[in-house]
Image (cartoon, rainbow over all chains, first blue to last red; front, side):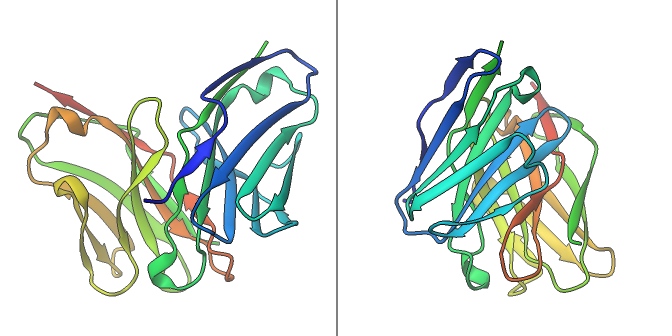
Length: 115
Length: 114
């Protein structure tokens, strides 16, 4: 089974802190994604990466950055956490090639609270 | 740009009743469409996917969805709801352009009454 592991299920951070959310997948997937989930808004794409050291902005990249130094690991960084970044963060990965391999596999999510 | 619209943020059914969750897509090319389920405090799990092989797609846990191009719809159904089906359901479409990025609807919360 594909496994996507997020380093923390729950995090509480203070305003202004630099926050790192880590995600690791074990299926050699090319694509990795970071979404945030808020009630009534569904999942919104923050950043995605289609290869090591390659990254593209998603729909809501402001206040975030990412790092992909190894194929299996994709990190989301909140440079200076703010209360409006309190949310559920979901990491996902996919092969990204061919119709039969397009589904995304998700981690369990990290519920981040910024106080 | 590809997108999906889920009609109804909440759907309430009785145990044993038909489940119908609606999803309409917007796409200029034949889309790849998905339904995911999210149980409380968990990530998303794939229920089923449409990739143009067959218009009626069967998924896990007794769910199925029918792709209707004329209606640009991909509604999710289950003949008989179980209490364990209570969850959040998301419809998704793959964006065009070769990057295979999933774009999600806003979700529908399924409530099952005993």
